Length: 267
Ligand SMILES: [Zn+2]
Image 1 (tube, protein in one colour):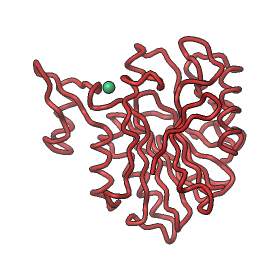
Image 2 (image 1 turned 90 degrees about the vertical axis):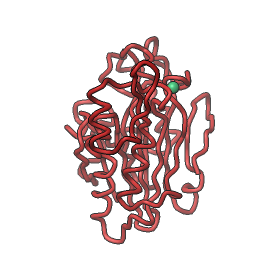
Image 3 (image 1 turned 30 degrees about the vertical axis):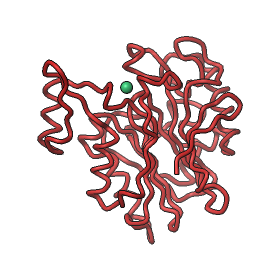
């Protein structure tokens, strides 16, 4: 269902099947086609990474126009690598859309049933996940790094969505955006150990000389299936942000870089 497209020099991964009749937009952005200068070149969408405010605002306007929802109608959160997922509605509309400080504090996921606003999260290596229940018309977005995976933030987001009437796990679609892949996500012994303990031996890939790697999308897929989402309803972009120069990579840049977005909106 996921499709990579390029519009006006911007790389997007979208779900065309949900547009049109369903009126649901899902979009994952890349790093090219914006106004930011190095090391944030060029479609950096985060205000809190040290980039020029003006550049980030024009980047958000550019992407907002493309998506059909201006940044004043976005809701973003101040992500903390935790497991808190907040339900947002008309009252929260605009929070974090044109600045960082008004964003929903201390949360790593958002869910909504309100049309006319976009919810999203920002990443550079972490995994952005968008959940959609077409029949109940509800959407969610979650930010999953290795800590978030251990906390089960994707499953928390699913849980919050299931609080809406008529929303059922069997009908849920899950979209896993671009993230650091199993090729590059090396972790230390203690982290590997935590994953073996909480998820299982298969969560960790053993490399040469005692190194360990994680497959974040596979781990989230496993967690979501355990929580009731059908395997056939989970779609993964399958690109590694560190290997693919079209994306911002925190690890690949030594920590000084921009952020891409994973967003969803009910039109
Ligand atoms: Zn890689």
